[in-house]
Length: 181
View: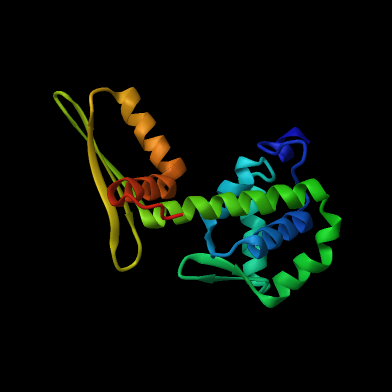
């Protein structure tokens, strides 16, 4: 029995039907399609399923037309959305909230990676870190800093990751002398 729960936390699932529901519900909470790895990352982070059950469930959902793979990413089909909506009450409220919050946080991470870039370079004196914010057509900001030690480099990277929007606003406000909130 323990082998069946390997990697699955106390709130997790080993029943294939429940895992399918969890996947459909998660995909219905996401604004963007997710890759196989992204779906599993979210579920594994919360110890909801183990990889083997996840793989089998996603394969069956795809085969049965409840989810569709488009350009390497999965989206729920009408039947998958209806299943998630109909059966969501069988999922405990805390699991639904956990999945919805995880989907939202993962979406923020994807957007950060999509529109923000951090590059680092080591030299004999320390590190150069370049932080950029861009959208599809224009680079909004690129700032390059020298930091003498790795601890400071990691702090800069984390603060930029956690607050790139606020950093951009602050720089604009400082340089223009106006308040653009």
